Length: 169
Image (cartoon, rainbow, N blue to C red; front, side, top):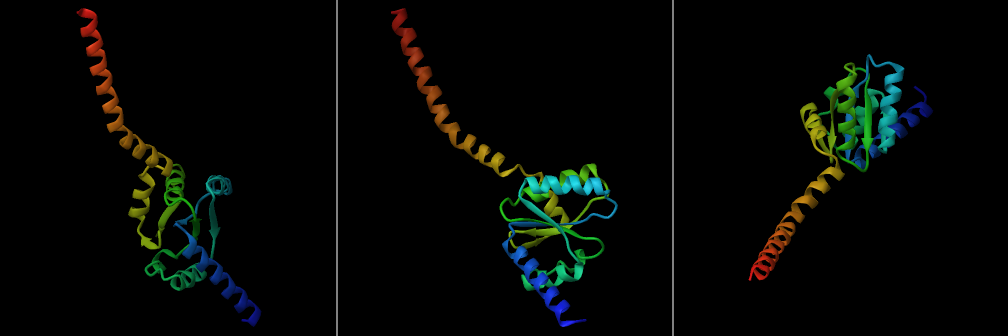
């Protein structure tokens, strides 16, 4: 192999290593059996959520994962492999890929990385079942507002009771 080819592959490994390190979450899938149209739809859904999906050789993925300090991913780097990298939202790639896999049976989640920790298929699918970040924030806001809302209702009830007793007198 020529020195130029070796340097090119080393550069590619370094790029993928940086993607692994910078990612909030990574979902690794086997896309074998998907039609071109299905892959295009999946890529568009991921792109709309600012998630990058790449098809990368397993040998490069394996070397990059080792350089990034991610042990235990070698077993998922077999067969056709596509990787979805998200730098912003931890839940989004798992949610999009899991929803897509439910309609496209050929797509198989192999594993992933969540906030720098190697994760199993079960952990990725459990993450996909969580509400989105906005949904979680909405739930938190609702919980925080509940005590204030209850106090307001109690004050209103007391005021109405006093008003009705003044009118009756």
